[in-house]
Length: 91
Ligand SMILES: [Zn+2]
Image (tube, protein in one colour):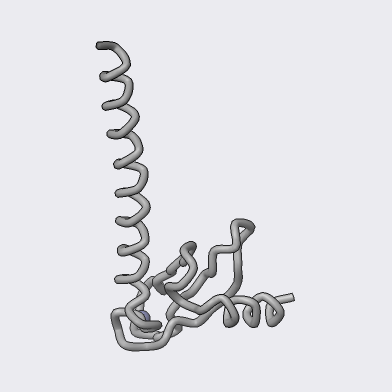
């Protein structure tokens, strides 16, 4: 009986992990908004962090506090070839 409980807990933790990943991906994708801030201005890339997430900010002076966006999943902001291009641009 005990191993069934362990299996259920394992499946539950696993689904939370997968579900959390999908949720985070969808969140980034929605916030990315096809490359545009909610104000309509395109995101401006300002660099990568150590985990290779791409940092973006909006330069529209309408914002009191410029919004930041960190994209960590591939395929949201760039294709793989474009990512390589951004990397060479920053070094
Ligand atoms: Zn904006």
